Each structure stands twice: as structure tokens, then as C-alpha cells.
Image 1 (cartoon, rainbow, N blue to C red):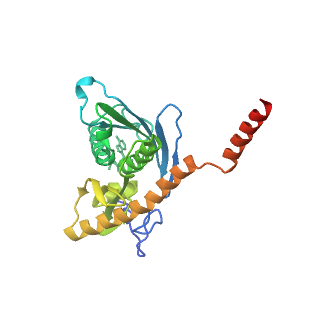
Image 2: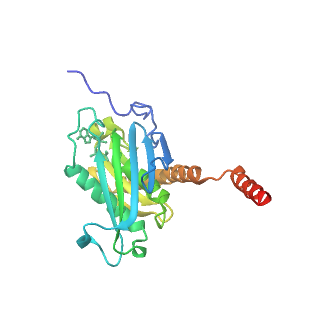
Image 3: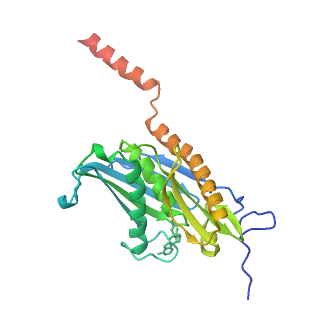
Length: 256
Ligand code: ADP
């Protein structure tokens, strides 16, 4: 029988060459869909995720409306072609759970009292999955919410820490998730360090748990910079634009 390759080599390098505290590469683009009020596309390692946001809009069915605040509803969905074996389309226990924890995370930051009886709807479509899709989906949805202009305390960011070959590892990849001893996704409001999502699969000691939380929070602060850059790029106004507008107005006045 062939022995499985260890997840960490003698220099504590991971199978994809990363250091134990290194993130997979992340790219985010805001405002990629014309029909949604806000949207974002995110690539995180081999994960590819699209997030669309609608609202605040009248909540349906009406009996679900809250007369004091907005509902924050999320639907996380994995495309049938997102994993190596075709995933059966439609909701399952896992996607219902992920949708629930993500909507709860955003309920904490959205100023819900400003929009009674309405709903803010978040759609997360996982196009390609390679472990860490709830973190990727939440991080993309956060940018989509900001792109939609939904008033929020701050952006939310998510990143997992796991354990492999007895060591804590930031942002576990697929192989590490399958063969590791723990996987702990966390989402945080970076400025205040309020934790709005914390889940754990596997075993960690109390000391490891504290260290893993610190690793995830620090990584979230790095990702926060990428989120803000994506939003800045989307809303950056080039200096030429207002000049062009002014020139058009001047020409119109002259012609009149
Ligand atoms: P997360 O994607 O947030 O890490 P899980 O820990 O439940 O959530 O899943 C880990 C990974 O397992 C996913 O990112 C995906 O690559 C894979 N996976 C999840 N569900 C399925 C499925 N139905 N079929 C094949 N692979 C799946």
C-alpha cells in the first residue's frame, strides 16, 4: 500500500508550497452584474464565487416581514459543476446550514432598523469549490453588500484556520481539509474584532483554539484591504471625467 504524502514537509512547507500562516492568492472584483443592486466576483486559490445582492426590498411572503427591521436572507448554492464529482443540484443540509450562518453574520452588521418590513437578499453561487467556500462566499457577499450601498457597520471578512500534522495552518486547501485534524472557519468585523461566525470541525486544544482565532483574524485584516481595494476600483472617478462633463456644459451654454 502506498503511504500518503505528509501534509507538511521537514521545513513545514505545505503540499502547495505555502508556509503555515500563508493565504492562498485572493482576487476580488466589485460590480460585475448589471441586474443586481450589488455584486462581486472572487477567486480564492481555486475557489471561484459570485455574489449578488438585492434590496432592501419589500419582504415576501408578507407574513415574514419584521415591522421593526429588515430581514437579511442568504442563499448559498454550489453549482453542479463546481466539484469533481457532479454535485446534485438544489439545496441540501450543508447549503441550508451555510446560508443560515452567513445570513446571521451579516444581520450583525447591516443597519436593519433603517429598513423595516424589507429584506436584503444575498445570493452566493459557488462556481468552483476547493475548500473554504463559505469563507470565500461570505467575503464576496460583503463586497456585494457594500456595492449595493446597504448601510453597514463595516465589511465582514472570513477565513479558516485548520490543523495538519499537528500544526495550525491558515486557510486549509482541499487536501488539508480532507486529511487534517481540524477546520475552523471564522468571520470577523475587522475594526472591532467582533466575531460573527465561528464553526469547528475536528479537535483543537484550548491553547490552539486561541492561536487559531488570532491567525484567522489577522488574515481577515489582510483580506479586508483587498475588499476595500476592489470597492475603490469600482467607484474611483478619473479626474478627466468631471472635466469632460464641464466642457459639455460649457459648449451647451455657448450654443444657447
Ligand atoms: P467549505 O467549502 O466552507 O470549506 P466544507 O468544509 O463543508 O465547506 O467543504 C469543504 C470542501 O469539500 C468544499 O469546498 C468542496 O470543495 C468539497 N465539497 C463540499 N460539498 C461537496 C459535494 N457535495 N461534492 C463534492 N465535494 C464537495
